[in-house]
Amino acid sequence: MSNRVPAGYIEAWMSFQIAGDPEGMYTSLGMKLTGFFSTQADADGVLTPMRDRLKVLVSTAYTVGPWHVMIGNAAGDARIDGSIAAVAGTGASSAVPQNTAFLIKKNTASGGRRNRGRMYVPGVSETWVGDYGVVAPANVTTINTAMAALLVDMVALSTIDEVSLLHNTAPFTPTPITSLICSTQVATQRRRLRR
Image (cartoon, rainbow, N blue to C red; front, side, top):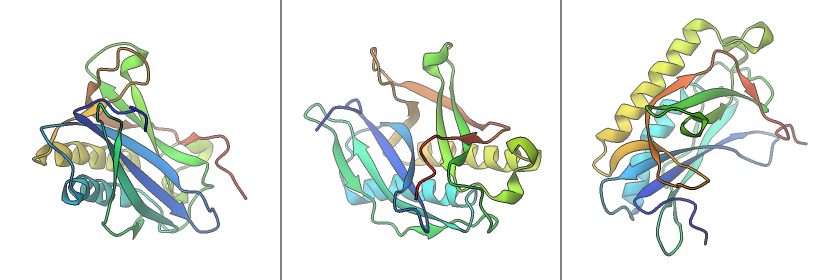
């Protein structure tokens, strides 16, 4: 197994499913641990607030889950699948095509492109966006409020020290995330429209 996640950190992966598309869509978030993290309860403790904060942003046409956590380890990343139930999104019913997602910017206190990340949240409800893919201002506020609450939820857990931006290139030391902010325009991802 590869060492994608540094020791002392985890990466939580969230899956979004829509009927008719056999492949799930994923987003992830890195976190620094306070100590040992290895049990089903540890994984579910992280995944439950993530599920609950994200489901309100996602169309009812989508299922939020299943989930898993990758644990950084010098011997190779370990995986724990979540045991919490997948749930339907609780946003508006009609959804835009699945190659469209909310773009959530991962901001840090450090400058430069390297210290900015992003995550995509699919399941955008048609009523949440207007012409040209612009997210209605009230919905941007709703998303930003949910993302701020997610950061608070994570660091309130006894297992999590901070939410972190993980890096794919050296130096690999993660950067603390200071905020998660929704872009005012939706993003599209190539190769997500599948049959």
